[in-house]
Length: 257
Ligand SMILES: C[S@@+](CC[C@H](N)C(=O)[O-])C[C@H]1O[C@@H](n2cnc3c(N)ncnc32)[C@H](O)[C@@H]1O
Image 1 (cartoon, rainbow, N blue to C red):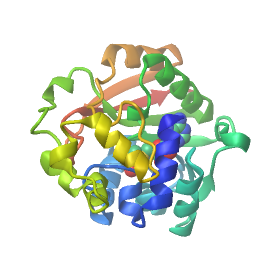
Image 2: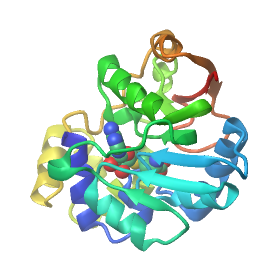
Image 3: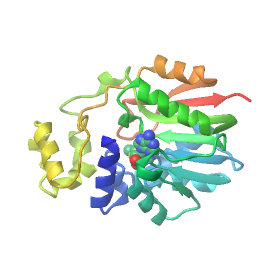
């Protein structure tokens, strides 16, 4: 809920879509295209596929994937993010949160390929992750594929270089952009509580984990969760260069008939 409020306030304040969903450095069309190529290859995306992008944000990657498949649906639980995604065009069906912010409703077994990319950092525990995995399982068709991608990884979490980490990245991020509004990274990265308060002063509600690297999820536990619901898991360390790639992995999960 904290993260949902955060994305909501960011979407209401920040004019540039590239920064709204919070990828360090923003998500330029060029980077979205490179990520989409990588995803299409890993998921073996085909022209006959019905694709679901779950937690799509404003849809930069979704838009780059849509021309490659038969039908594309984008789902996000943040209402303002969905509104901006719809305004951004593309041959995409958008699904937002239910009444009172309840989870989006999806048809069971309707999608041959499901992508859930760069949203696992909003889950703190493995049980929250399991609930998410169950949701994806319900939506995937028989013999379908789920890619749970850009997931913070426990084994790689030591690769964060605290202090160095983020300095260059953050300068160019949406956090850097917020600097224009009296956020001073040199000062604020040393005192996250004060930083958090200043963001609140701007009307942006940061989650309590904000600013810290995610500790990461255990590969064995995540793999077991997918296996228990009938998936065969391949874990891929991300080969393309982008800001999170050094601490995250992709799970590509194949379900049987
Ligand atoms: C960091 S953005 C990533 C967007 C996009 N997938 C990308 O890679 O750029 C995370 C998005 O996931 C959404 N999100 C997080 N948890 C979700 C959940 N449980 N259900 C639906 N959307 C979720 C947030 O609203 C936010 O727009």
